[in-house]
Image (cartoon, rainbow, N blue to C red; front, side, top):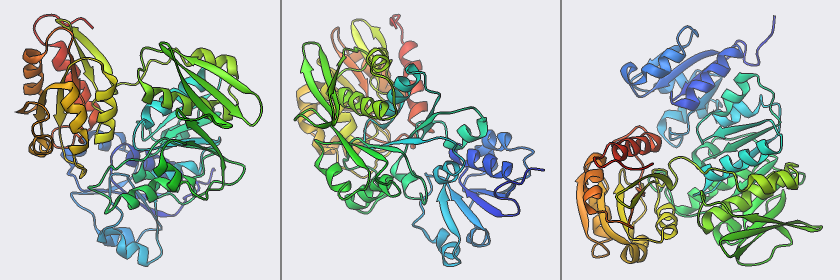
Length: 460
């Protein structure tokens, strides 16, 4: 009989989103007695409960009981649940460990992990790196905050050479032992100010990616981002940078070429030049994502020839400046993943045509005023949805004409009337989706469905 690592232990899993369900499944496999608790009622949790049917898990739904947590041997918390509340106080005072699914799964991972964090570009870079490693013949898992929990990689039983995981600040808050062989820190801008008291608190959560790394590990850093430099001050892993402003002796130097970017990799020896000419990932920000992925791929041992070819076959990421259709000469883009101001600034700056901009959702605490100059120079009409619409209109008053549309469906109809040949219609919300949608993915898919259903036959 196989003895599980958690045999006989009482474990409470707080939150039954994707990572919570995966954590429950892994814990059950390892012999734990699991209580799963969620603030939502069973009707809202039907898909999760169906997956866990027959596992012997006890559920406490409709709220969390601090006594349940304090009586556990271990608490595993989902990233969407704040850990700085009174709920966790009794458990912590009893010495109960409170960790996240990322930390739980990493203890069972049979291969090195590469972790990608930053405010923007995490998902694209994670998927891009997975693409490069796969092209090099590496058996790779790609997931984490990107969509598939790391526990699912463990549960699959598949042979994996490298696990590439996107990690959010929420996930990093609860790590104890998670140690990536290679960490990537792409950029650092204000975000999630509805969760963190200060920008410094947010930066400190992100910097925990380096917490368990040693001198034999590696860190890939944005050498042009001063805040990343501050967050990474004094770290122990070997540092490799990427930069479009200066030549680097260790890392990737990004050089602009006609219709392309040249990425020059150096690791203390000879330099290797790669040409990035991929129209599906436009803009300097994507060259930076490619540079970070290139550095990590070479650090993981991917051969130069495979990397050079794969750089230009990456198809980009769903919901990130994703081309949806051409309708009457106007190009429609789904950028639902742009949930903060800095990400929207990148998107607005990457389109060289007049923009009909759909924005709004649940406010995340940061002001929208930094977008004023970009909006004034590029946006011909702003169509606002969701709870944050009045805040966006107030912060950007006078930068462009704004219309309150309420729902995404109304905004798409208004955009179809406002867009002219040669324009771009861009859903780039600058907000989370939780006022009207389950997540940014649902919002993006609904947008694409609405666009393709418009009369007039859009050409995909």
